Image (cartoon, rainbow, N blue to C red; front, side, top):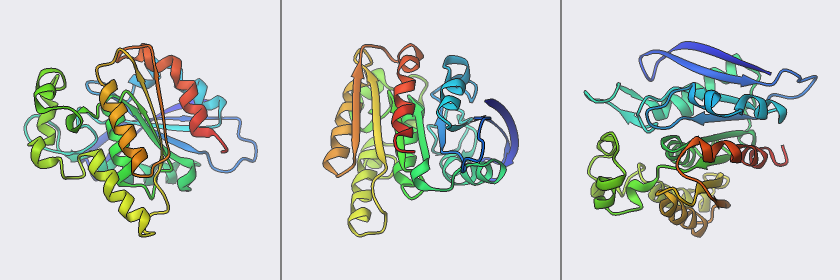
Length: 262
């Protein structure tokens, strides 16, 4: 296996950006790698997954490539203004990064072998961007997703779900509830596109969240909403809080789900 660090000038973010790429070595004559684009959480970086889990070993054992980009505190959305670095982190991850890494490495170009996932802020980013670009991603892996902004009351968001002022990214929650910032709204629009034959299917989605995580209710309610709209959803709760102490032990199970039938 190898974990590589690359830096390139992003057209979407208008600066040099770091990316970690995990590649299995022992390929033989295998076809291009199935690939997971793995997003970090709030106040984290592209180094957080390698430092806090055994992602490189477990992914390599399964023949899975993993691309881990840097997203600042953007919630993997288009952001700007004085509090956040300017750039469209959504277009960067779902379009530019996918194309750059496919061109540079032996990565699959098939939707069924291209995945997106993340923890906390990254879980929200994976779900929102995976649904928004269902033509690109076949599976979405959500660890303890920070999906609460539109799943709980504005009062609870203000009290518990706005640690660093990140709710400002979403604007007026009453107004943006009916927009693609809201995964529930986005899934409803995607269901219409699937019914019309414009998209082949929903991406498959797997949620994993700790029972002591205050986000458990939001993840549970959103998973049920996706099921009702026709998505194939697996949902797992297990003892644990909102930390890598929960994510680490459950990461092999998530990787096995991604690689099932691959």
